[in-house]
Length: 137
Image 1 (cartoon, helix red, strand yellow):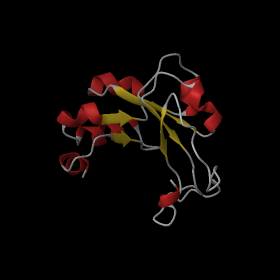
Image 2 (tube, rainbow, N blue to C red):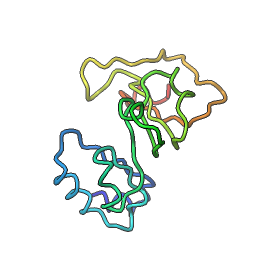
Image 3 (tube, rainbow, N blue to C red):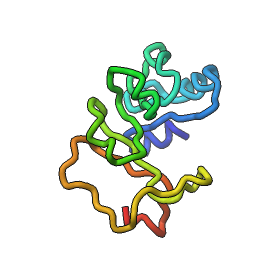
Image 4 (cartoon, helix red, strand yellow):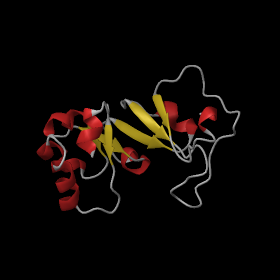
């Protein structure tokens, strides 16, 4: 399926599989054609990325704060942190709206919220985004 998505024009694939074993993660990755590895960002098992031929890494807030070098992407949950992070291509921010997959995770923004005009970092909104509220994004 991932190969088909890349063939159809997918630009970037974030491989995030919470709770998966190292072996299963590696097996999943091996099922993807190596020609696409430069477009894959791994969320777990970063230390094995070079062995697998993957060089782009996503860091959670916790992992980001415990390391000195930057990665490809990171996550933030408070917009005040947006301009405090450097060295990442972009950041995921959420949940913007009430999470669909994580019960109890409320949205963090009012519907009339506007991002600052000038930001140092690119931002990807996620969390609770549906057909009904996408226009607000």
